[in-house]
Image (cartoon, rainbow, N blue to C red; front, top):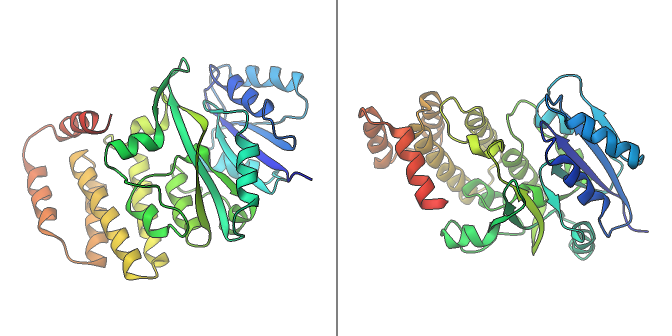
Length: 317
């Protein structure tokens, strides 16, 4: 038999897109899928849209939460009801292409038993479904990566960003071992990559199987704003990663990440996080000359958050 795949679709104020996301699951060519839809107390008409689809498709398991819990807690509540061997965490504004589940299950079945996660390429789309860019091609063109790491990638996920989270298919035993997402954090993917890659291999499927929505409400649009809760979670993840490092390569990768986040904290105006990252670096190694240079620049009366935003818009958009 085809192994059961559980898709957890998380919705929060995605009334405009949730029907397309759900239909992209229902229209998969793969025959054995459990679909769990969780609404995290939306304030728009998301619940009404979902309820209509449930009437049309009674196999959908719908959880309407009475209060907002955040992505990590909402996903863990759905995880308690998951029956599949494999799991996909699908945002309610993203779209799976019809062969995605079939292609990823096939990839898993030909992989080593130590593989816990298969991730693939993706196209980013706007609110109207127009393709904006390709995930991997964009990272390579901006020289953020020169290849996609795979296998035992613990130091790689510490050092740089390259995984498009919505493309992941995860073995349930990975999430069981990790006891789900860390609910103390404001976001889930970096922490998941760090903890999962310590115990399981990740493999990259060089196919575009998902359309990932980019719009003004996207969580990623708030990165490095002053008072950014996600940045503080990144600090907590880096602090947690200290005890997971097993080699000099691991430690150096973590130091590289801490230094990067320190610089972003300084120039985004997040002074508390800058202090925390500086302290964490000092616990692992000595400060470089760049540290003192960045600290000096931060004292200059310039609009650093605005300057940083303009630079990154020019450099990476």
